Amino acid sequence: MLSKKTKYAFHALTYLGKNRDQKTVLIQDIAAAYGISHKFLENILLELKKAGILGSKKGKGGGYYLIKEPKDVALSKVIRLLDGPIALLPCVSLNYYEPCAECQSEAECGLNKVMIQVRDEMLNVLENKSLADILDKE
Amino acid sequence: MLSKKTKYAFHALTYLGKNRDQKTVLIQDIAAAYGISHKFLENILLELKKAGILGSKKGKGGGYYLIKEPKDVALSKVIRLLDGPIALLPCVSLNYYEPCAECQSEAECGLNKVMIQVRDEMLNVLENKSLADILDKE
DNA sequence: ATAAACCCTATAAAAATTGTAGAGTTTATA
DNA sequence: TATAAACTCTACAATTTTTATAGGGTTTAT
Image 1 (tube, rainbow over the protein chains, first blue to last red):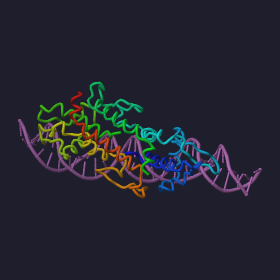
Image 2 (image 1 turned 90 degrees about the horizontal axis):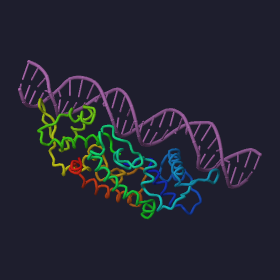
Image 3 (image 1 turned 45 degrees about the vertical axis):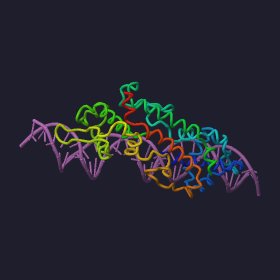
């Protein structure tokens, strides 16, 4: 399951995507729309900004806005940013690889090989679905 | 990512699958093979037994053995048993459904709809790959 | 009878997630 | 130029989940 952080990130992105006509949107408006803690959401939006997905304007009248086109915000990008690896095992993660402590030899590990296939099929979905698909369905 | 519990379950199933010629296999042999805590693994094997995947023989000379055919042990079954939902959100889980607290109406939630599609594509992989696929690659 | 081995429940330790606090910094505007 | 609004940043507290351990109970071969 995705963490709440990631789920809230998707909600926030959806909200921002629906309000692209506005210059900026307040954190508190997004928080209120979903009944999420303002401060918790703040951290999430900051991460999305640092990742280049959102932009912000400081000071009075400021807020956040979507920088990227919704179609260019893949689900995989948001999940990796806030939740970490998409792969089911560390030893098959492309972005967060770590060997499994219990594993003598990856080359001889059947679990490793199968999980590489699973990862590739999951990525095929998550890289190709984007914020645009979410917005299309709202 | 899968929990260690689930990963160890796959290792144990693989070990048992490779030793189907033996009547039983000791917990401690599996634990030793992967350097896993005996007691931690014990709980895992017990769950696999309760789920009807493994059988056991008590007393001296006892141990665990695979009941099912490897091809009938889908990855999805093991993951659900030890890790819980496969779906990325509670509101799209088939086996562990819960509404999202922040969601007014699932019918109008684009995230929900997209995550249903993601779930179905993930299930398509995880239901169709099995212990047999792991064993084939060892 | 004894030792080997699984069965079961409870609990402790560690890690991750979730949430909060508060002091900066920037900016519009009166 | 004072003020209030709003994002920035770091640290930390609370909660939950995961991981691991403990220890007695039951079954069975010999």
